[in-house]
Length: 397
Image (cartoon, one colour):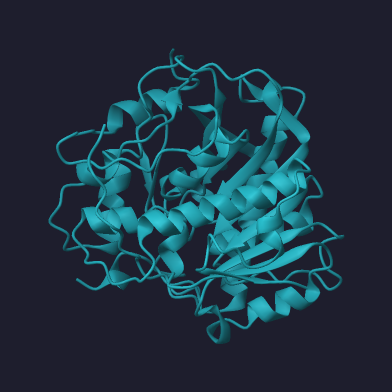
């Protein structure tokens, strides 16, 4: 089975599926109707499921789900659908021993549509994907304190679940994480009313063949994220636990076009103080003169240049703290949970950097960046090569 059939391509960035090492199968009420729907629609079969690597921070992790509707903005891809709707998974530091069962990875219908879109001849049932086991407990009580907020945006065609491994880890390290689904841009997004919205622009933009198309997606995502920030930090927040968010410390990270959207969001919204692009073409160019001195981290696979000239162009424009990290042996999917999904559907391992290691590196460097810029904690690992991480090359200004 060809790995590239599972994942779309975003311009010159090849969205190839990264297989993984085999992982062993181990082992209060929802905050919104969306949680009820997602929980009931997901199927977990312990005999067939794997579990994400455990979070590395000191906090237990909670998760609740939000359904947000922007009544001031029609959906950019399907105007006949009415107002723009978003599904957001909120991960947060939690009090140990509170909350319900661990949260489902994705709904079965989301998994079915993902397989249908990217691996149409897959023989495994969608429950194998939806049944991936997580660590966050549904609607656990939040830990005491106020925490920085990090918004995560997934790659094109990919559901938000594919960044769960990173989201859970950031929450365990003391961050509130808003993991956003962008409907009609991914294989499927399940809404509280039971509908699962399919991808309507995946064929049209399957290769995101030019900067105009990619820029439109990145710009739309920037509007999505600004709306999410409004609803999380405004006077009447949509999330019941919004009091734990420190609205003066907000960052954003994204994979693929979600990484381009991080730059686009920072250009449009000064509330986002720090951004990370994980192996995404910069379809939305950083404005001439940079991002008003705000820090930006670029993490890529070793083959990004010369395939993607936007990274060199962006590097030259960034005017604040900046680093360019390269993970040797990685490819486009290595910064997500996609390698685990590939393993579960039987795609052989051909990538030098195994899934467990790529996830550990992604978690460590993304957290170090936000620890430095949102918490003010020095991070020497970002200042040059680390003997503990020989796969990582650090480019300094």
